[in-house]
Length: 147
Image (spheres, rainbow, N blue to C red):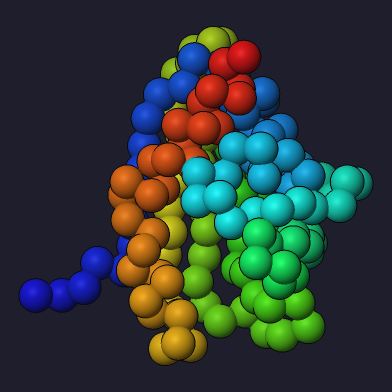
């Protein structure tokens, strides 16, 4: 059996894509809806607007992460490779894709891709990003966007 290294969670959120995207593209807001409860805080003023930007986060365990933006389309898609601050990314990617259904509904897909993860010490953690774990973030994002 081949191990699943690309995991997706998708659902429709009753909010415009622009509203949802603002919550994702502004790192300072991410800890409010992170379903894994591992993001403690992020400095304000890091709103993502393009590929090749970086943003930093403090994790609940006190460590710092720098996230390197590798995909970006305003209002539609954003993806980043995380790394311990001061180090190179290890190859895994978190991606968010938004597909407007109409003016008030958006299909949201959250993907965790660890096909290129090179740090075997991270494999156990990578395996914890199941569809259910990703859906937890999507569901909390939904609550925030719909309020």
